[in-house]
Amino acid sequence: MSAGRGKMGRLRDGVAQIAFGNPIYKLTLGGRAPTALSVVPPDPWPGDAGEGSAILAGVFRFGGQAAAADAHGAPNWRAGSAVWQDALHGFEWLRDLRAVGGDTARRRARSLVLSWLDHNGGWNAQTWAPEVLGARIAAWIGLHDFYCASADDEFRAAVFDSLARQVKHLTRVVPGALDGKALVTAAKGLVYGGFCLPEYERAGQDALKLLERELPRQILPDGGHVERCPSVQLRILRDLIDMRSVLRTARADVPEALQHAIDRMTPALRFFRHGDGGLALFNGGREEDAALVDTVLAQADARGRPLKSAPHTGFERLIAGRTMVLMDTGVPPVTGLDATAHAGTLSLEMSVGKERLIVNCGAHPVKTGPWRAALAGTAAHSTVVLAETNSSEVIEAGGLGRRPSHVGCERQENDGAVLVVATHNGYSRNFGYLHRRRVYLAENGEDLRGEDMMEPVIGATPEPRPFTIRFHLHPSVQATPVQGGQVQLKLPSGAAWRLRASGGTLELEESIYLGSGDEPRRTTQIAISGHTGPAIKTVKWALRRERKGG
Image (cartoon, rainbow, N blue to C red; front, side):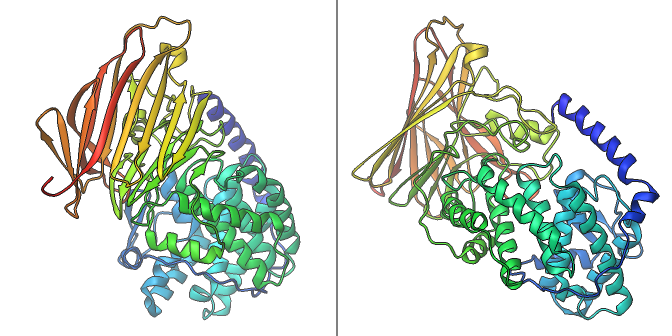
């Protein structure tokens, strides 16, 4: 978050505290509450039995942070990082308890909901934030049959009274200043509340009108989401599927904008999948669970092969043989939709079959602070870093400052071979250079070649600057230096590739990987370094598969 947006956010919080954080406002949320759901929507999403067992043992693990329960088995509802708090109060972890199964898990779910009701009955800036409210309302309603259906009347009355209050408040604050994923999540809560709680249909209809306006803006013509993050793509598609399920169960019309968004987002989600079924690591995204991705794609029930190119979202997919390369060829998201954006322009990832070879470093569950500064920086991506400076200015609190204003891209295909040429101007203002990257994948998928060029801006005479081209390797890849300044890369399957480079000095360095899990894994990166000059500086590199005995 920039300083300006931070001040504005604090001002909004202060105004909200005056408006909502007083006893009189709490009274306005009262009234007759429903006693049952009019619609019980399906919830097809898998939970994590391991995480559910941890909750049963009194350990709550969210956003890279673990906290122990108190003597009553409940968490401290007001402690923890913002990411941890959002996950805790969103209640999607009820699925993890459901995955454990049995009466013990069901009773623990009820006791935790009851504890929340005891400690969070009134408005709070974080725990009643619209996107958190939306997630919680949807979770409480969607998982109703797990934790609430067999409960006593007193518990059910308390749950439905709270649901009614939460939905009423949500109708008053949406859309407000929300945008992107947060707005969709809040709208989802209104759809669930509006169509599943008797006499609240007006809230649901208003949410659908909001989505009809918003989805054409957020979902780009190629089906990618405007935030340019594969994990956000997965999340929003899942939310849209959930909302469609609610409407179908309620026998209500599904708006064309909602169905159209699902139909377009599904091939775009396939676009971001590597051969192992997980997602590429761009703009704060993580691998995600391949089984969940499979479930989302199945529930979408939308045909459409993965795209080759996503020009509106700004990504290219090169695929030949068993090799796939994904490349970031777009401008970063606009201010306000860039909270998780990374400075990874022209970075690429490569997988061979089900094995990842070249990666970006990923993202930490805590999206702000030192981890963001490190992992959102250009050096954490498989691309060029000039003068040890990020191609976009990374703000630790979230978002980007200075950024490329133009990213050009051309794609050519010929007899199964693919060539992508892309250029960005993120270094032109400060240093007077353009970065141009040419990536060619041969038709058999066993020959990947590239050129990285630092081109002086026309009319400029920039000073020489150091640069480094980085290729971060997946932790499963073994890198071994070989004669002639080359590197052999061996995959777990035994397949070997060799990287050669000219125009710079090649070295192996340490790196980290946070594509999955909450703890960084040690890995290796290939760094090709040199200096720019008055003319175009070109580094050529090639990555070819080695044949046994050849």
